[in-house]
Length: 329
Image (tube, rainbow, N blue to C red; front, side, top):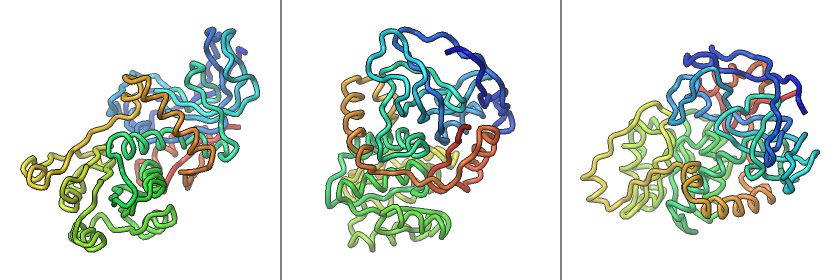
């Protein structure tokens, strides 16, 4: 199905201001490829970083940002059997999602569960995969344990809250404003704290009966990371998820030794690429969660494709609570 479609294109590594809406022409499908008409695209922090050339994956301009969508199948390659034209699906890619069409291998396509809308499906997978890999594969969070979720009002943070509660843990989240802390509690956290509080670790210890938390989930980095190490229990697990603050912390090795905790780095997407069996197990587990509506995302802002730059600016100015989504006509 050839023809023109519109896309939000990053034309220079200068941030959201470089985004231009351009017309593209669709290319013929490979035998195992699927063409999807995008109905909604999730907006992720790495999308913003890519427009500055600051993400691990650093495409050269011009490129189309965006890592996840939900939409309808409009064409399939000759060897595709798993989905058909008209199916509601969600998928992810390293880029290209801020566009009215996306072509992906059929193996990357997941049927959208009836429990999720297009908007929810477009911002469910990336955060869910990260939270699952962190809390299930890396931390092995157990019922009855405690988890401290930093940056809990963000999309990944809220997914982590819901998954940790699903596992039966007590959850403490941090949010920088009262409205963010209210949203954290509404998402299911047991407690919500201000990350700017100097005595944050003392507050955490009071909530945990003096023990500290078993797991720290940290997509923030910077000074907050070091503050959170003082709230970790003996033998705890500190998950290094990302650096939304823009600052990479230097952890005191002697402190990790004294308290016997582990620093655990994770890259959920890369882990799945390197371990196909892990990828299959993850997909199966997430399909079950999605089918029940578990970890349903909180969408605070929606934007039209023409306002894709504004969507990225909203992430940059920290005004998004939960997720932002770009919707297509």
